[in-house]
Length: 124
Image (cartoon, rainbow, N blue to C red; front, side, top):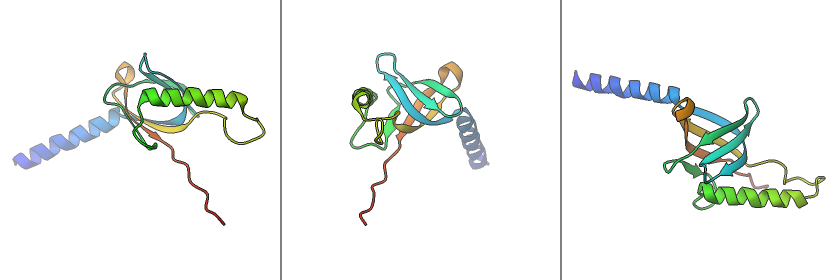
């Protein structure tokens, strides 16, 4: 009987937790490390500003990535894009990410940022 009650409470926690979580797909537009915000450009919702904290993590890149490092990387990429030849690929837009959040409304916080990985072209 106790097992059934514990299982029921655990399942309820999973359902409520997933209902409060959000997933956003888009491109990183900017990062403000001092304000602890990440702005992504989504196809459906336009710009979405999300907060991060010490528990938020970034996965999918080379090595360990922090929001500060990602902000520096994005700033360098924007500078390169200014000098890039518009007729060539690359240098247009931000990095593709999937952002998972917890909480709702003003209490919504990033739990994970998953960076898109590039597929290497196979040599013919």
